[in-house]
Image 1 (spheres, rainbow, N blue to C red):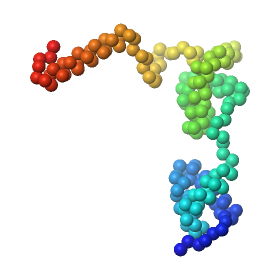
Image 2 (cartoon, rainbow, N blue to C red; image 1 turned 90 degrees about the vertical axis):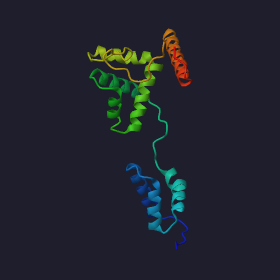
Image 3 (cartoon, rainbow, N blue to C red; image 1 turned 60 degrees about the vertical axis):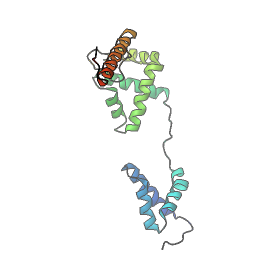
Image 4 (cartoon, helix red, strand yellow; image 1 turned 45 degrees about the horizontal axis):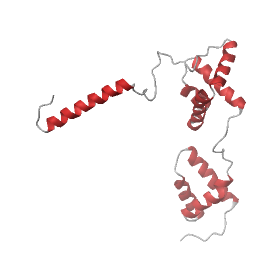
Length: 186
């Protein structure tokens, strides 16, 4: 039978925090931590879980969910990505390198770069011009290289092409329906 406890010691809190950080780093479920600490402290796993979420987790010095880029960080990001593109590296590879392999940070950098291309093209052009004046090799990110395959959603069909595709599909459907009904397809 589990013992009755009235509080947590600093050592128990430290053990719980350490085990939770290890589990997150190793990508293990926190439930394994709660079960293990419960066994060590003779508490119920739900009590350990509740203590963690009400006392331990809020006290952690976690990185904020949203951390805005400073002006200097934004320009440094643009410089780094543009120079990487100039050396033949992809945006994804560059931002993954910048993030030291942390995919969350990589996505943050990649998304910021792509957002800058759309929302602040003049800023991107200004940083590129500065790099060109320094004699650096920097491609124009707004001009697509014809030798590089397009990644992403294909462009929407033109009106005429779309009408032709629809007509072809309608004919195919009519022929299939006629075949299933034993008629000659035409």
